[in-house]
Length: 256
Image 1 (cartoon, helix red, strand yellow):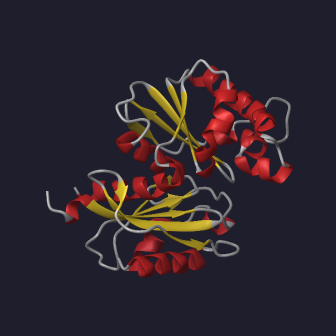
Image 2 (image 1 turned 120 degrees about the vertical axis):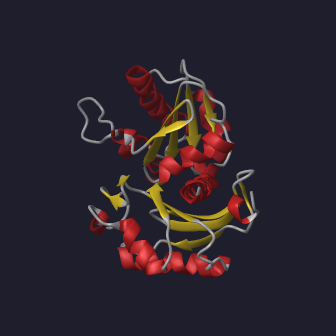
């Protein structure tokens, strides 16, 4: 395999920031510094495309021969975004992959952000060689989820939107890390909310492993020991880089 065939660019689009890097897919490691720009206010498609161009320009990876994967906070089926989380409603039902391919003048692979984080952890992280059912949750502005069975991704699971019994707010609105910041919760108070969420997932799906990703996973020692679950629960290895690494990995798959 050539050197070029083991490298790809990953771009992770979020509600507040857009991150990108060149990735070594043989080892699941960044080959460049991570470039980050703010997500444009309103997060309309054209403005987000311009921001992605800025990231790629800063990385100096305009070469279309290097595969490019893009992660996005939405349900993605056949390149079309079917939902919009913390971005403009314009994305709902939008031909996002084609829009980016036309705008960047190159092929890309477009996928859900939590799903690509799950791929990164399955290939290079906490879910590597994990048997059975693994559920990765990204705790940030919302709750993203990736479902893996024996390492195979089951795409577009939106388990953060499970409804709480007799409550107006779903689990995402109540238990995401943004609730900690918004309501100034202590780790212990937040852990009680997470306990309810993960216990419900256990009841519904009987998973073999939980993985907690997102930026807050670097503080895993503050809240994971406060949870009492039957299922092992561990922090993601790649934390906030998982989206970049997973997006790049899926882009490379398209080249094979």
